[in-house]
Image (cartoon, rainbow, N blue to C red; front, side, top):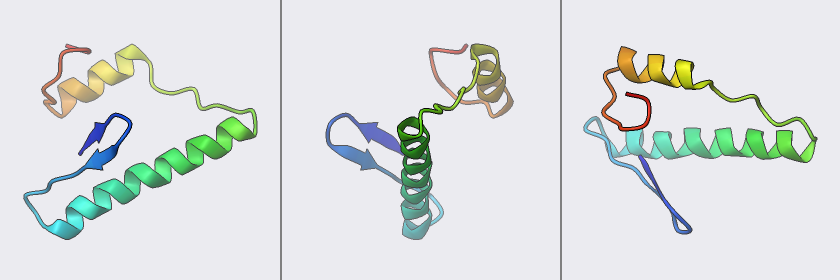
Length: 67
């Protein structure tokens, strides 16, 4: 899934169309909860750079930011 700035998201899955739709639903749900936290004045802490680096390494994610 990728976020297409100012337009929305695009998702793809090798498993099924339903799995691609599920990815979008997970992201929407996460965004909804974060929005509710912000409105309540309690933004989430988020992940540290070290945690992001661990995730990228553990799951062999190809990216440039946390190499």
